[in-house]
Length: 104
Image 1: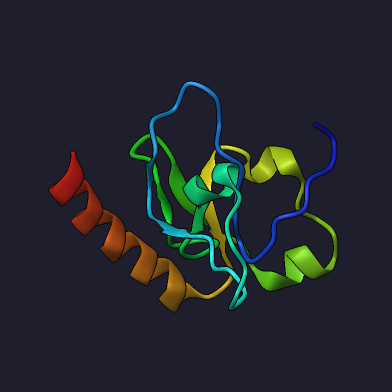
Image 2 (image 1 turned 180 degrees about the vertical axis):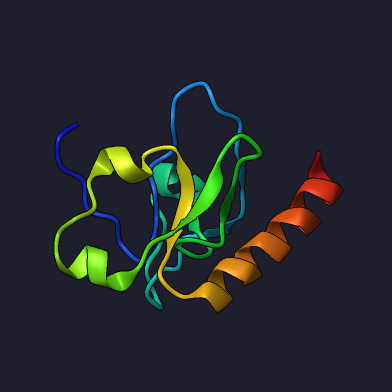
């Protein structure tokens, strides 16, 4: 893969890795009836705070590097998520410790 865009810090999952995911049921418009296949449709609760993998680490990147186009997929493909704010990175790291302690 040569090009990949990360929306709000989300990074694609890698093959042969085990992830803990936090999902919510896909919301529907009032009055809409789910089709049979849609009844089991879920989406991440958040772009960055819904996926955890012990073998991957979050990546802090200076926003300047992103704005200048210096970041390539190879730079973050093995990261669990991308952060440009240190307080959000710390929050993710704190949550990940709780997640790993409870679920693994």
